[in-house]
Length: 421
Figure: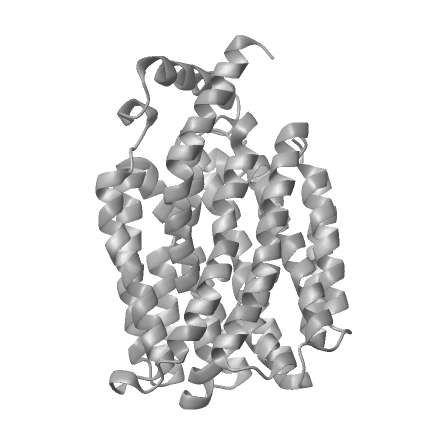
């Protein structure tokens, strides 16, 4: 390794240490607010008379508005800056998430979830685009994998917290599920104002980099930017690029699995354990913890080898097989084991996948391309919860839905091998 490469790696490590922990915190809060409805359902469905199909539709409808507003939101972020726009996103979604405590019937549930998706649209791809302005592509899979562990860390942390909040049922005249929405929505509002003061927009604005470090980082990013100019740069070109659409189709399979399992996992655990709310929360944290380990290890190995597609494909195969197997095992222990491997497989796809997906140009074209992949892919966030709810209501079990997800995920893993690096 040359001295220049060593310097670049050292500066990239410093950037990761400075930015990633704060961004992880933001996404933990985002992910908890996104999936806490799965824990609320342990009480809310019975209290409000929601059927599995009603709950599945309401859980998934978040992604319809999220998808519809994703690209416009990310284009605005590229123009006004990540700091201001991410703060706006967090404040509005936190207020709407807390307001879900006032839901009383299915129509209000659907409307609240739709508004939550519209408010949060652009957050995740905005963060991904933001990181492309700070971290060179050679170091990106590790950074993205570490950042995206926040979705799983949110499960590890949020599951027992959600279970504990549900146990406040009746305190202060509020049901446990109302306490859950209120308490877990407010941190996003607070952190939104913190973002305005704590997040540096670009390396040029970072007082925590000295002149030599800043020059090293900017030189590395400038070299990549020169290469990016040979790729789709305008919004029109990025959105008409076949590679971008193929990546979007592959990504579609990941949210189907991630959110299909995420929204229904507490009820699956309740079914096989018959535990109380807090016990279900603790047990639900186990698959998320296993997923965190897999995501970090696979992301690091992908960076060391520089290979992306096979890391995605093999992770998809493991996850798909585990989803299918989870449909035929019984008992708490075996169910936890296969569900943990299912989450490990789908989570391990994320770091290498987004490293592959971020190599699509620069400027507004890159922002639009990233948002397109995330938007089309996140239609899967609607499909997964809805299909699981529909099949559970029509068949009386989760088995058919889990097999459907397993087959779809394995298909996405095979398709990624057709993506040009």
